Length: 301
Image (cartoon, rainbow, N blue to C red; front, top):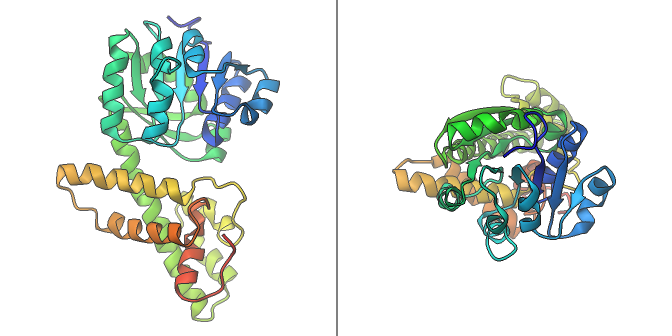
């Protein structure tokens, strides 16, 4: 059971960009936070600010009332969950597990079934937004799973953003994948238009400003516009992860018989981005990918 009604003990498994930012925000809000990561080095600053380190996911699970996992893919989630030192081994009855990674809905549903056998509850709670939104507490969080468990953890989620319970296990992930189709396609279309304008002789800085402030300027595009010509050293959302999500969405769509024509095309361009060496660069690098396809100047990947 939770330690108190307002300040349960939080355990975070996966202290990368997103998981680390979540842990930092929860620490700042006054929650006791325990955590682990594949390498302790990435957690040193969090430890200095009060995070209690554990060497294994099992160690985190044994002390947490609410577990948060933020991992890269199905394989990373399976590794953290399974085995003698995995989360499943340390789960206690009454624990709520917020699985905030973007993984396949099928894998998430299977894991949720294993969690229920221990008397705990797992919610898939993927997010829309990146590190800046975590720090500001403005993530959009789509949650699938048991409604009662959602009610217990909603205050924790509200520290990170705006949660919405959308249905049973797996449905939060399906909605997140639906959003990420648009994320990839929007950025690709924006990059296409920008390359077209620049290749025609229009000053590219001017074109970027006008386009981002026109009717097509969604919050995502406006946030990424400053990155297009000055890619960050550490990506907010790497092209490799974008492609992983697009491919997960295509897998779900195939099972439902739903056509995804723009996602199909985006997947092709994202595959080319990998070949050109951009897989670790931010989504904003799609401009450089298309520019290179035209034979234009290249920003080093």
